[in-house]
Length: 338
Image 1: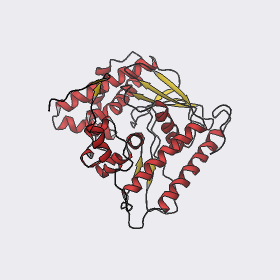
Image 2: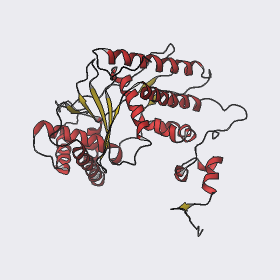
Image 3: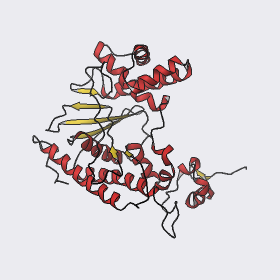
Image 4: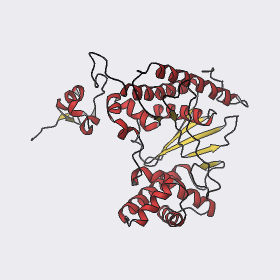
């Protein structure tokens, strides 16, 4: 990667060249992994997003064992759709009124609008819920999306700061931005299609070669993520790869605490994020290959509280050892009556 400027992306075009260096570095490392893949292995298309990176960091063995069902998008649910619905509803509200939005009313109005002409995948899903009479699904989605709106407005304030735009896939929201398409490295072999996605909730500033813009990610709960610095590292790299320009900052906010943390994007942050991207791809490719002699699927398992609900815990030696140890709560042993 290119050396870190004294101030992130302060000169015109510097942020573009910086991003090109990140792309070249990551593409070269991916190329090496694909070249080392067994000739009979077929990993399929590899998609890299933050949740995959978090899973690999949590326990590589559990991630590999997830298979296609665990790697692919699981489909819309009230939980997975909350942020998308919240952003879309809030974006239309911003376009139509300058008054402080009523979160639940804003979501319900958006749901009524899109039923006649859905303009995005999540809008089509909401329309399907309505057409099939799934009132529980609609109510749960509306409640969670309203919570997302309330938390986001709490963090950024109202009216929105100048040059802050929500990221939505909705042509009926002229003030919103469209999300960047995933970055797909050009590999010498087309055997393994790879895509790295950046999905910010909002962008502050102007996306231009100067790089004077921030990418923002809003979480309903502060406990949703691993170490925030690791999330910032991944999102900085993913945004640089997908947009082709290195942002000035990654902003992480949380609705429950109202916190908003700005991480300056520098070379060490991008290096850590690149490592996360490459690790996801490495474990996806490893999952497609036969085990090496003398190894098991769980040699690199990372046991912890997640073992209690891990679907592969019964076959995982490290996980079983962790589950068998005496449990403690606030330093005191927990007595099992079973």
